[in-house]
Length: 576
Image 1 (cartoon, helix red, strand yellow):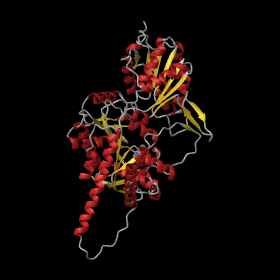
Image 2 (image 1 turned 45 degrees about the horizontal axis):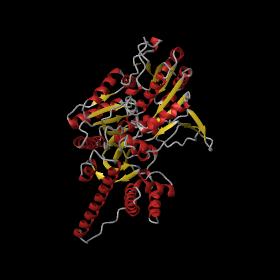
Image 3 (image 1 turned 90 degrees about the vertical axis):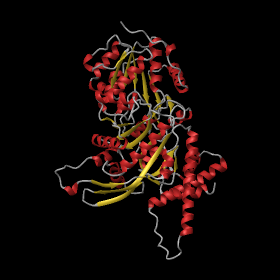
Image 4 (image 1 turned 135 degrees about the vertical axis):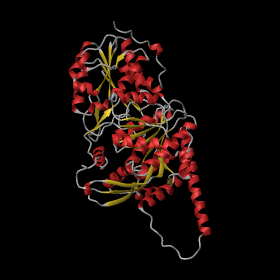
């Protein structure tokens, strides 16, 4: 006997974007509908409400949910059961048919790719409503994409969901509409869009502060040469990748120092409004994850939860961590998307993955708000590419087909190759070896704006930023960051004045020219000071002033701007 249809009156009240999207869906009643909503906005609730509507009005009598991972199958089934929709998370391809005890099943894209005929038969047997969660995954391989298209072409209705509709490849995503622009390039088209900027304005998600750490790194190349570089300074893409890899090595000082700062931030948040706040370290591989977990255990005295692969044991550990008040989890990739742990408030981005898609998915783990005023803080290496992604977090992107590709040397495949160790039996002089790395706070990025003048780890200047209250509105975050930066700059001026008074006017030391990194930091501080002054004169938000300078002068956000670009913006704002 089939389960009863859900009762619409028992559904939770919809948010404004969910209600508007539902009205649009019910008015159009088209076969395919694509909803793009930022992580934490409530895509699952929206999708289940649409599923309930089509079950109640008789348009469909079965529901199939397709999601990226095994863990998400259970998560979807539990969420559906709470609103009266019974979905089987344990359906296997060998079962062939769904049990009549359920309205339908939750399956993965991998399952569909392995046996599309099984799911096509299920779709033909009952009038089916298909929810394709994080639909961009259907473009991960031609097998998955072709399988999804073949299996669900007969469905009565298809609802496509994603928080990150863009991809790094050009595999067309099944059932997505592409529109060709005047430039001849095809871009994905969504029927409903609710971005991070909209959700932040509505207080649906948390504001995210990015604390970028630079530092000195030293390594030995595969040719046996010893090199040194400072994270954040202008250099070639290969050197950036190698310095980045060196910083992430657990045997150096960079990771322990950053983790100590991240744990201090977590403590502060726990003491002020979020007593169960948790932290997540996103690692590149299993070996690094285990090493980071040991560092955290030594630092905090509490074992960290380690999630290494998408298996049953991993799902159990994620669920246990989500329901506990444990401090830290360390994971490799699988917690990058869809996993709902609302208490996560502090992150350490300790992975080489660098695509906009992966970065957005990873940061999405920290933006889910439970109450107004919660903030999130993510610690990351001061790598220009990552700083740009952090600065442009609010940007809306679509999946693009046919666009010319500009290789920046920071795609994931290159960095993952750099992460692979050489054969232990090979020549010793052919092996990359990280020698040392130290960390210091380079800048804090919020709302596309860079704050701070740099600070050594363990100093009062760093503590000023780590000690920001855990419960703040977006406007309060900006106000406090401006105040911290002003205090920091005033303290530096007082220190310089004191040094000038006590300095003995004897033999002058030769002036040491600033390095490119020091010059860039100095210009960034000068630009931020001028922007703050312009803000006080005009009352325009800092972010809008920076955006106007970018419009007038061109170039990326100030966090990744070159010396020449910063000089041009300084000259421009002085004329405004």
